[in-house]
Length: 151
Image 1 (cartoon, rainbow, N blue to C red):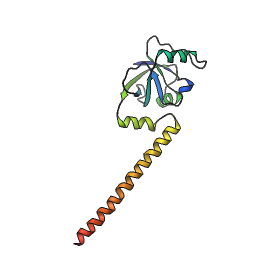
Image 2 (cartoon, one colour):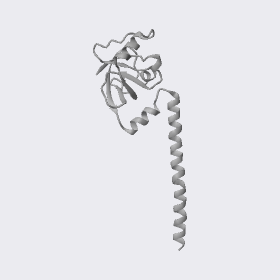
Image 3 (cartoon, one colour):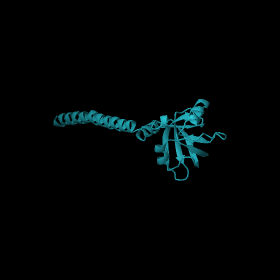
């Protein structure tokens, strides 16, 4: 579907959220640029009348043209990831994301540096804890094997 791309409000920058009229029960969506096949997974919020009012009152944004409901608001970080420019019309594919891997992808590619860094530290810590958990079991197995082989 063809969407008109708008920038997000200043207060929404680095929140990892896009706004659109897309209907879904999932709070994460995958947006794919059909032209270059690049995609992102982001949090999604539905545009509503209060948001439109606040957006159109901002001195830093152009008013939303919502006559056709094919509008999407994406911050600069994600627009750069998709290689798109603001205020253009572009063919995008949007799908809901419900998988665990999709949620991990969202966190690992979040627009906020703190979220991204925290995710990678937590992920590395988890991997190290798995290694330290299985390493002693390996030593115990070797010890029992040695005892059994000596009998």
